[in-house]
Amino acid sequence: MTVADAARVADAASGLTGVPVSPGRVVGVVVTMPAPVPEPDSARLPEDADVELSVTQVLAAVTAVQEDLTARSARAEGTAAEVLAVTAAMAADPALARDAVGRVQEGRTAPARAVWEAGSDAASRLEAVGGLLGERARDVRDVRDRIVAALLGLPVPGVPDPGSPFVLVADDLAPADTAQLDPERVLAVVTRGGGPTSHTAILARALGIPAVVAVDGALDLRDGETVLVDGAAGTVGRDPSAAAVAAVASGRRERRTFDGAGRTADGRRVELLANVASGEDARAAAAAGAEGVGLFRTEFCFLGRAVEPGVDEQVEAYRAVLAAFGGRKVVVRTLDAGADKPLPFVTAESEPNPALGVRGLRTSRRHPEVLDRQLDAIARAAAAEDADVWVMAPMIATPDEADAFVELCATHGLDRAGVMIEVPSAALGARWALARATFASIGTNDLTQYTMAADREVSDLARLATAWQPAVLALVGAACSGAALNDRPIGVCGEAAADPVLAPVLVGLGVTSLSMTPVALADVAAVLAATSSELCEELAFLALQQPTAEAARAAVRARLPVLDELGL
Image (cartoon, rainbow, N blue to C red; front, top):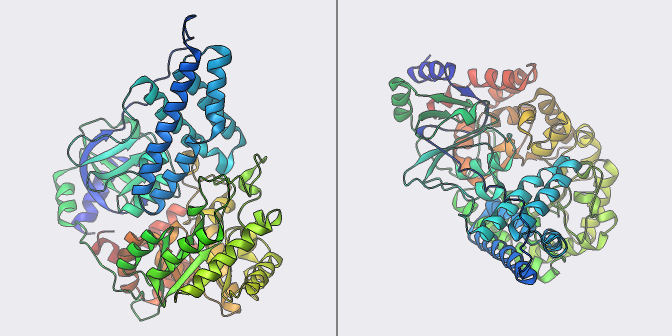
């Protein structure tokens, strides 16, 4: 055991543990999220109050919050921009303002109290629905708090700025807060809530900020105390020893770069691609050395809109991504609406269980024209640029659905048509789906959620909601076997692809490409370059033999000493 290992073990024993979601080891001073906006008093308007003036105040505050979030979205990039756009859309939801205005007019409720009650009721309704839509309750409460703060003249809720770098500790982070984390100020993130595929985890990885979520006892941490956060091991050491602090300082990760060609130690090629949502994302991914795009989330130009964007507008958005990867592969995912991303022009106003409802490709059954126009836009963009365009559909569950999508793509001249594998039936039936589809991409976030029946945002289920679960890895292996039978490429585009410890396991299971946030490319490439394809296969077998996710991860780490050498 190295000195760093010994220090890590000693401090972990006296610290807190949670779910590791973003690697890196740092020592820093704790700063906790400020108290939430207080609940306004149950106040009624005075008899002589101007009700219409109060209504105007509510509408002005709603507009101000919406405009602020929209402006922040425009300045952000990638997943952060997408998250802020969704939150801005919620602020613009007329139902919230209408409910608050009604309470002012009919019940003479004070503006701040009216907004609080309207937002709280809306969040409770979402939680009652549950599933992915239930996750949006946090967004609604965030919007509610921002509007109330505007009405009361209070500071806007958000991440504190103590003036020096710090470790941020919170019960949980609203998506809008997480989207605005500054890696120059926030050394690490520790939360009591969340899970490995929550917004906090996804954005922390994208920003390269070490993070541990679902930490029992996180709220016992106090402002000013020093902690050692190990985002790879999932530990938070309190009052770390001098040896541990020195080990972190001496083992500080170097800033690695990716040379643009992923491979194992013995030369087996593994494409290392990027997940993007816009032209700006694509340019940043190309600058980071990505070999191409493994997941282009096209819904970014659809979010926050009451009507579908026109074909010409879509063409322009798609060309911006394709132009950044001339001559290289760009995998375009068709609209993934529904569940936590409702869009009024394709999804129903309410469903008993949206996570198991009409989402992804299923929305085209009632609205085939939306998919048809999108494929037309993709084809026109592909013809105008020289990128190698592949197209895939989300939420494929049966071979019939795969066949129908391939045929539809063919009518638009798109001959590289593939499927997303996000549900167990698709993984188990991959050999039949890939008899026609030309490739597959495994979305490990949803595949994990559906396999383990574990909502990815529920902190109590965080240890279930990880792709390290042997059952999930077995389904990945089944999908890879189906692809091999048909000599088809198969990738992973979920958050699991960005885990440098899991990457060799996925390659050992048969995955031919990994698509991730660009910041993870260099770390994943470094681990693969130090691991032979034979060892990758041994690690995959080893992980599948373990009874739990924790045991699988520990067993693999024990066989990969390069992780400590790389500071991962």
